[in-house]
Amino acid sequence: MNNAVKILILASIGGIIGYITNVIAIKLIFRPIEPFKIPIINKDIIGIIPKRKSEIAVNIGEVIQEEFLSLDEILENIITQEDKENVIEYIKIKIKVIVNEKMAFAPSGLKNLIQGYVSDAIETEIRQSIDDLTEEMLIKANRRINIQKMVENKINDLDLYELEEIILRIAKNELKHIEVLGFALGFMIGIIQGLIIIFI
Image (cartoon, rainbow, N blue to C red; front, side):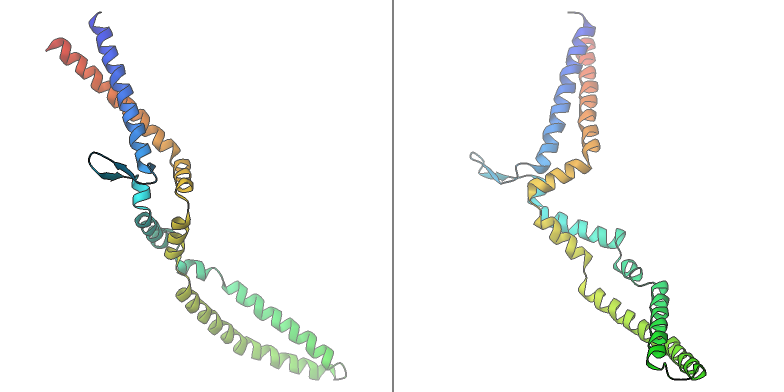
């Protein structure tokens, strides 16, 4: 058997070992889901994610609340200035219809005068009331809604098999790259070992 074949065999073995090692390492992130006791050393073995699920949930909740989903930004977009203007316009139209219906007998000049007065009152009083109500709603929402806690609860409520499936689905390509990288590194180490055996 010539040297090139020896190096190729050692490289292939190294690549296979590297690939299998990384596949097992990835599996150990999730498995075993239930603690498994090793009799001789009397130690429980459990996957990283099942073991630290609560801690992971807290960290993900923090990141989402602080970096992605600011409650203030969400609340600011619930009631916009345009929404307030639409409410005021709607009230004005409704008042105009009511005045016309209830005061059908009155002269048009009087009706116009009342409608103008009511319209001015709406502009000042209702606008301020809407602003006050909006601010109160935002304050209450800020007290009641906790995005971090909601995310934590959702993750903690997930079955570990579901959580594993979600993570694998999201990071499928990245995990595949890790497996391939294990093969590549093992292959290179095998070549180096072959060269050392032959030339030293």
